[in-house]
Length: 500
Ligand code: ADP
Image 1: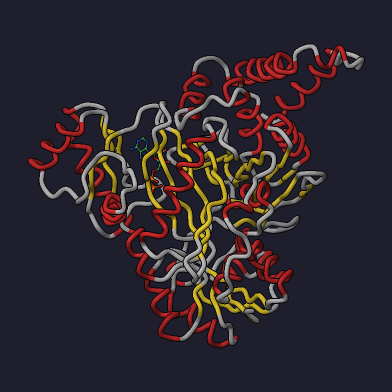
Image 2: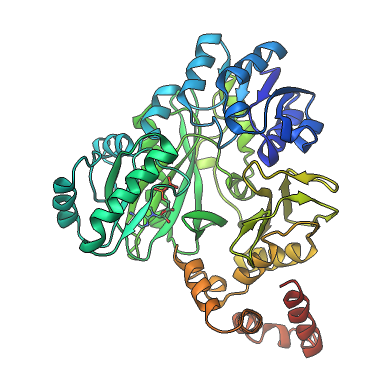
């Protein structure tokens, strides 16, 4: 059992790891930058170490400062959270040199998965289906044109070291190929200090569905179901749910088995996620593997009952997995909304500032993984994720209703948040019907551009309520309960519209 760990991160994920430590009797140690002196994770940790200026390169991305903090406080292990240094093999190697346990995979599988073309090659060799495309980066225009002809349009150009949707370019026709290639290369160079770009076929009507796996040091690898992550804005996830309303049991199981094969083939350890693109015929292809804990891990925890952070700490301490594949039986549905400090009515502009009033939702099946408090000043220097609101329900419908209830309770004054954006998504007939792909949000934004936003929003809510009523059929009426008053419904539309 570990005794003391350093958490090389901030915000909600640092708080999440502190909570697991407290339950396990492990001493959690925080690090903080100038911008985070008053952050929640600093308040909640047992000890906290100052590591530099607000700029990530001077603090949370500075490997030596993190190592130095771990040694100063006598931590046996480092939890990297996600983002920052979580997938940086240099930190893993430095930990190995200093005899500090890195709570994550060894450096070798991390390196393989950190580069998209090497990951694709390795997965192809292991018999994992990959998206059709090149296994190497493209070096010249002649080769680019030849490969593009082979693969066909539309296609995607991707930065080999890509992440966060950067260096990703959709090319719809041959005329745009070379100009898009140049743009992708320059974006790859500025974001990842490497211009390498490769080509992938663009999968039509795509779903992004990922499988959570955990692997111990004794060769046991178990998958913990899937997460539907197709609700994306500019290639970034905004809402996730499990189980996926799109998958059937056969595909679900096949994807789980392939994810285990992918992880085993590279000697993966600890928690990881294998991401897939699933086409309209439910054919699935390896997209990438995230060698760390994912933002959206709580939905898997809610349906499996497995605390993934505790599981990570146990594996790092050298313990075998306490469950086998057949013990994992997900129950019910779970959903997560990423509450960001952004203004959804002004092109998602960052909205930093002081939270002057905060009321957080609670009640059965509601979980708020947050890094904020009333009076806290949200800095502009980092990712705008304030909290993750998660609901669990016995059915998808109950989970959505609970989420709507929780979002209505959530009150954050002083800054703008994405809460109204989720209310809009959750009431959309297509979402309610579980029929959406990665294009949903861009289509919604197009719909909104036509017609006045307030009218469009009211119409959406009305359509959403109608869909609910239809889905419930006559059950409510025949159960003897009075039909809801129109005034109440109108009032609710008004309440939601007021938030616009
Ligand atoms: P990043 O690592 O930058 O996040 P990914 O390769 O994970 O990039 O892709 C991000 C998103 O882009 C996916 O979740 C999916 O929505 C979309 N995408 C990626 N590759 C394809 C593809 N070949 N076909 C269709 N959509 C894709």
